[in-house]
Amino acid sequence: MADDVFEARYLDEFVALTLAQVGEAAGLTADEMRELIDAGLLAPSRAAPTAFDARAVVVAREASRVRREFALDDVHSVCVVMRLVERVHGLERELTTLRARLGPG
Amino acid sequence: MKYRDYYAILGVPRDADADAIKKAYRKLARQYHPDVSKEAGAEEKFKEVAEAYQTLSDAEKRAAYDQLGRHAPGQDFRPPPGWEQSFGGASFGAGGAAFDDVDLADLFAGLAGARGRSRRRGQPMRGRDFEAAVQVTLDQAYHGTEVELDLSVPEFDEDGVAHRVGERTRVRIPRGVTPGQRLRVPGKGGKGYSGGPDGDLYLDIDVAPHPVFRIDGLDIHLDLPLAPWEAVLGTELDMPTPGGKVSLRVPAGTRAGQQLRLAGRGLVRTDGKSGHLLATVRIVVPTVVDDAERALWRDLAQRSSFNPRAALDQEAGHGR
Image 1 (cartoon, each protein chain N blue to C red):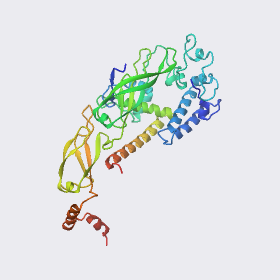
Image 2 (cartoon, rainbow over the protein chains, first blue to last red):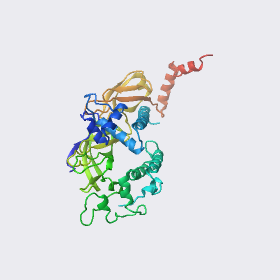
Image 3 (spheres, each protein chain N blue to C red):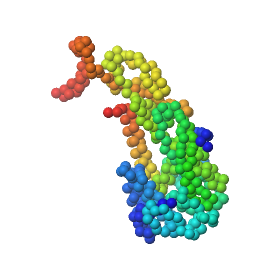
């Protein structure tokens, strides 16, 4: 079994997934998926307007995780939390950039 | 199988209603969720709380859990006789299902309604996705590498009982991965049900700190120490990069803090996207000089009209 080597792929590598496939991977219904699209958290791949890439799976799974872990009742609350978490991650990336540029001490 | 008292973990009585359970969970989630809390032990505490809520918030799982009876936390136990027939979904073989390798959290995962959706036997369903954290060195991130992963994954038997099994998987990490990046290994997650596709394995990449290079996206930063005469006169030197040494021309008049860019010498992905190597100049001075060197420095100090604090003097005297 360990002799076979499996390729790990970038998430933005184009993989044509349907909305249903993304929803299934994230454990979300079609209606819930459409709510995420309406809220601007999900968008089809730029390469094909009706298909989604693997990043969409990550975002959808994240939405599912946030709803589950904070016991949120509605997608609006999920969107607010995800935007805040995204802001925190952005600040952490800026901090990493500054540390990389300034170096130790 | 070790017992965990989910009611005690959430701080609710055993007859608490669904609203009380949800309220108790939300309060603990706000306190311990890793996205909002950095206190020591918060992540572990959150996992415990989330596991308790996942069971007690589902009517069927809660009923199954209550029927396990009460035990001391951490105590080894087995479900009471008849439990499997009531909640296992199908009859078990003689001697009952083996529970030694079953985790309490996984025990209810095979119940109908698990994962938020009902499952009818025979209906194709996609397998679960797995996640694993992988740390690589900067050299491995730059060149790509193969890693062997030892995963402990739940595998459902035909009666829907989840057993933890060890699975070893060898994965090729492409070159050019960055800290915090997530990769996908298609089809290496949980097995699909009734002919459904297998889930995927997601890898969270971490790159170990390097003594010289610092990563920022696909760019690589390092400090470039120069002697004062090298900065003034310019020089040519061998610059270390993750891909080997390259020759760098330092122009005359290079200042401290200035960034010298080597285009395309950062991390390079397999799809061709690449970053740059950015060397930040640091002027370093010799701290031990002999008499002859000291004399040369004194001579230069007397001959030069250079005032490094000219702008400072001007700013300090502004408005007088």
